[in-house]
Length: 291
Image (tube, rainbow, N blue to C red; front, side, top):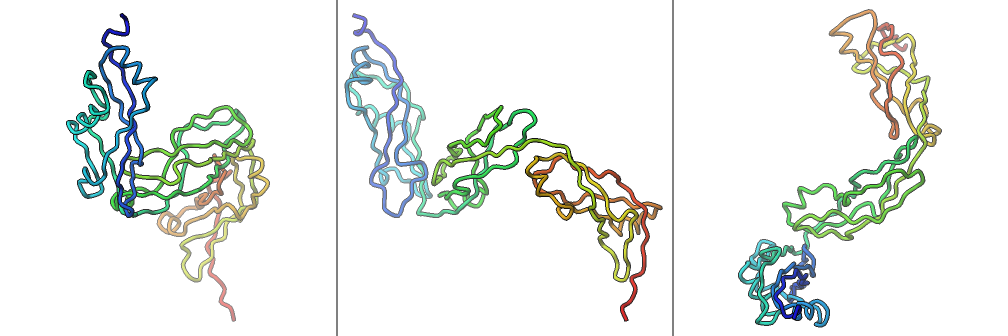
């Protein structure tokens, strides 16, 4: 008696685009799905769920192609097509989506780099030194307009906290409507390092925008920078990795007894870099002519 009563149930119906021309690349995938809410007797609902072969909705590419890289099955057409998959006693309550759209192009594509997104935080006293990707770029198929606008493909949002060793994750790439990504997942490897506060001495001060025939002399000629980095990064650093400058144009426009110096370049993997002094004594000398 219970199974003879009326029930509503949401079912997932696979959708397949058929009769696709050879020169067409489907951007929304050959197989997708629609969620259909139906009402019928409990015994019939159970039959749909467990006893009968899984129903598939086949949509002919040429019948619904609207041109311009898009095909559309209207809400009324979609309901009629779905109704044919069920018994006459079954009432279609709703479909999600209400109408069905598919996207395609004739092969326009380009390669774009992959980047991770989300929250990736190692244990305290460790930091994320860098990440690598395999592959490091993917091929995207889309309309010319979308191809021009997409510069990077990001992973789905990651949430990895409290690790200290190298971590490799198999990530799916974020879906973009009307865009097909090949491959649709990548391996991202995160490398950690131990944080350390360090300093580097002997970084020369370079004069920029110097007129011909003039030389900037600073006292001292070399300075020190403090920073935070990883142990492995620090072992590879040398003074030439940093650039400290003094600008002649600033001295010309605002003469003073001391000149300001600026940290212009810091190597990758460095944070909180700061000079130990921001001003130094200086002289501007005439360059001696070579005989």
